[in-house]
Image (cartoon, rainbow, N blue to C red; front, top):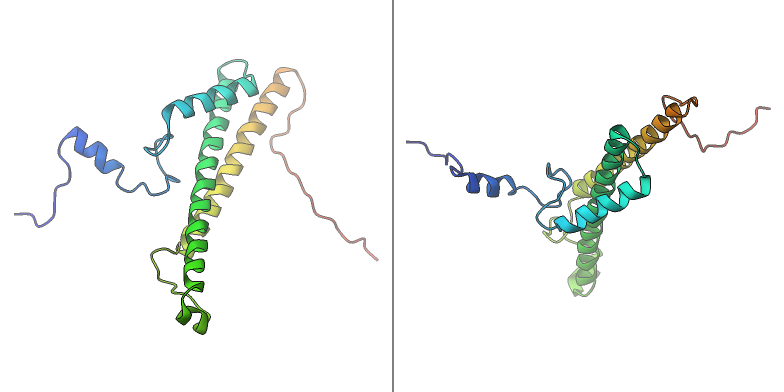
Length: 167
């Protein structure tokens, strides 16, 4: 006899179990997670695709990719806002406690506080999504340029640093 559960057996049970780990949805395989509205997603896609005005299947695929990255970036922003709000509320509640003000500290293992690794993970994921978005938009622009016979760089590099002149 097995001491561990074999897990869900039915298709419905497996579908429910597949969503067990969704907390903020940042790494969700599904583009629309249970806390989001499918009709809002479809409207978002329609708006982005219309805005980018793709011509042909490749441009359309790149426009869809941009829409997905923008949707996921909104989710990442929500997750970051929720985590920092929990942190702020916790600090406010601790400020009202006499023992917290006397000690000048807060309980770092409080369940109300976001784990610093969670915030770090959100920020890294957001940066990843931004790179993916800019890559899709760059590819769309380069594809359009090549269709027009214009030179299209393989990669876009933007440097915004100033350098001190040599003496």
